[in-house]
Image 1 (cartoon, rainbow over the protein chains, first blue to last red):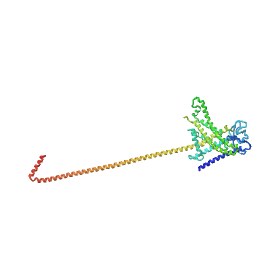
Image 2: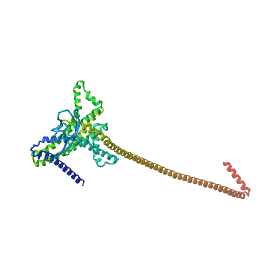
Image 3: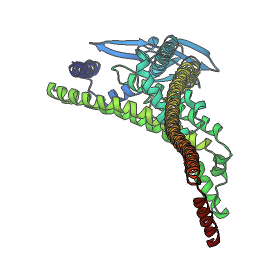
Length: 339
Length: 164
């Protein structure tokens, strides 16, 4: 009975992934493959369009109708002050509005003046949704503990409890050491933010949030700031005054400083590259169908994409784990007592 | 938008949103969740240690009981031994006493018999003596009726005296 149930669950999962992949073919297909105007299909452009940020949320096209969600553009410049308007005013980059226009997806001022762009782009919208989802889910989990005091976990609580315990006992505690408790809220938020971002990014039409260098860079910088402020005398002593002969110090101090700086850079790049590469692989395989104009290739690439999507689900989890693990280890190295 | 150039807006929103998420979750999610997990773990640990304690207490109690039982058994054996010894002693004493009494009684009886015998013998001797004297008197009276016989007897006596 149980085995049968599990089997059908597997089947359901595979079918749903297959379906989402077939669905994700449709926007590409309608834009590029069935385009009768003679515009050549450019896989590079299509892939970049999917993995980079945008001022509007493009879902799919029906014929020549773009189904998009226009998002607010927020710009500030010393010349014009603060301006907030809908990106729908650009008409997919075809017209300018209030002195601004879209040039190949970039927001530029028509007269070329300097401005600061705080627009709610596709990634920012996805970021807000992910953040909201996290708050809703984990306050629900917390409510479970309040309602069910001292009892066995139930529902959503029992799904997240082993993950939370795993992060606490297998990642943060061994990484940071005895002072781990202070950093646990940050580490849990970090893990779930990356995990949710990675998984949400795999949905068709979703934003490539955690595959964006700005997102991963900010996370890495926050870890770097925490590491630097947690660093004790022992940690900074090893960087600026390593226990080596004086003659070696001019060589070793820069090396140590590079080591300190390379940690956040490696964190940011690893996550960005892993997630973006996954998206590019999936999109490239989908693009094959439109390059070859063949249903057979389409079926074959769908099957392969299904397989890759499962791997991407795994990668989503592994990357969240790795980011949290390395953050813990960096902080652990900074707070470690001399022994 | 390019792949490798981070957008200012996204950096800004990510900073604000992520820090907000961390702060909100730390207060409303992680604190109660981690607190509840810790409470549960300590309660489980306490229950386990309490069970362990109860077990060791049980064992102590059992050991004590066994010790008490062993002591009681020892005591019982000792009392039994003592009682047996006392009984035996009593029996021996009684036998000795009885032996002594019977020996004494025998002795007394023997003494009494001896005394009686002596008395009886003395009595018989007395009677025999008086009877002999009577007979001798009678005989003398008869024999000394003539002088001649008296003379010969006296002579005989004197002769005896001389011999001695």
